[in-house]
Figure 1 (cartoon, rainbow over the protein chains, first blue to last red):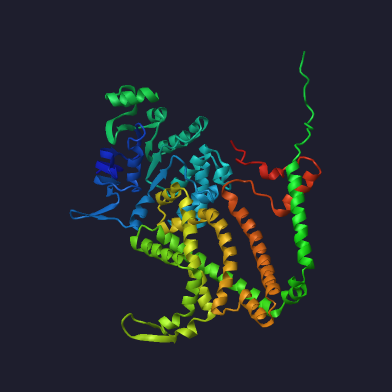
Figure 2 (cartoon, chains in turn red, orange):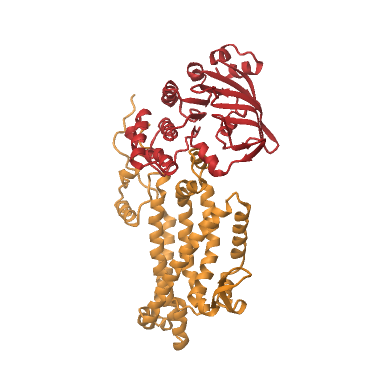
Length: 254
Length: 318
């Protein structure tokens, strides 16, 4: 049986009285690049953060690789996961943030090595070797001993990708990974992501880069006001949107 | 007609600061008057000051002052950081306990706390270890446990912890939330995140006010004289109570306090300089560097900044 990597059924999320997600239904298959687009405030990022339980959902069911996110089901009762168990599940999901969030007091290499050494308790030599391989993959071996502030935004984001990959995740979440970058630096980050897609990584990408979505994405959803408005092949949705709201949004960004 | 090209470096007449010269003269006169008064006024009794500056009792007092400052600060900092982490904990019990602690120890004068600890025996004559409401295993006489040193330490350290907790909390909260998110996304536990990611970054904000606290603590130790702890001020009092040379001995004590705070101020400068790493590559000049720079300036040459500090402010990568 083929279990989807991510399955979301009627997911709701509110911050106080503000309902941010109003019933999200979608499935992400293994090895797929799944793009989420939509205007700001539409709940894209919040949904992404629900997937690795940085936010708790209020209603519905959300599962990763067949296991509920943040809860354990026993009979027909749900039990909240302990912090430690939730953390254990996050290890298998990599996340890349809009503002990189590298650890500024550590070198590039230390950034990449921190979690495998401290969380997975792997031997340092083994982690170092893997970290250098990953830095090579994102083209930054030469910067291993630099501090994040000495790097450009694009380089920082590539380090952030290597850092997430160091935990050998089965799923990568990208939260507007190029939105904070100078235009000329966007390409180098997208190149790394494109390569990752070719290597078969399952990726969910919240993005405003329609070109990337069209070229690399296998599936695309358009979200607005906490709901999935339209879903389909990126080419179809972007070229022939069937909803007014999608059309209105695309006419502004394309 | 073509404009002449100005290729040579500018030699302009600098602005004259007349006000500065006047102020300098006024201050110079005032200082001269003060020094004259200090030297000619026999009541200063400089000979007594000189005779007592390295008096054995004074030196022992200096040592005790340093010792209690160090121990009280170490206990205060550790307890303070623990309280700050508790205060920010999602566990309401921990956070309220920390809040209550800070409320109490910041809300009562440290002098009162000192005397209170010293007189603990009146309230609790014996201190025992055992099962609550059950049998006791060992018991001590409170008066033998709470020596002047212990009373002083409890009073100063517990009070200091409340202030350090607030300083640490501000430091922890100054760290970008994204850092916590990134570490949780990597599967790090709350404790790991705090220890490995948040606290090292909070240090930059925590260190400067902590230096201030150390200096403040050094002087607050003089309060400990009320519980007969023989530190600098207590020993000074002991001497002038016998000899009635109050003023010269107070000057002796002040000289020592000034020496100690000067050493601490210098240390604070270098520690701050070290922890400034994260923010920029530019470091403030040390005293010697500043001196050198000022000497250059007197030669009316624009001082060339040490090039290494200005290069690479952004890594020179972009």
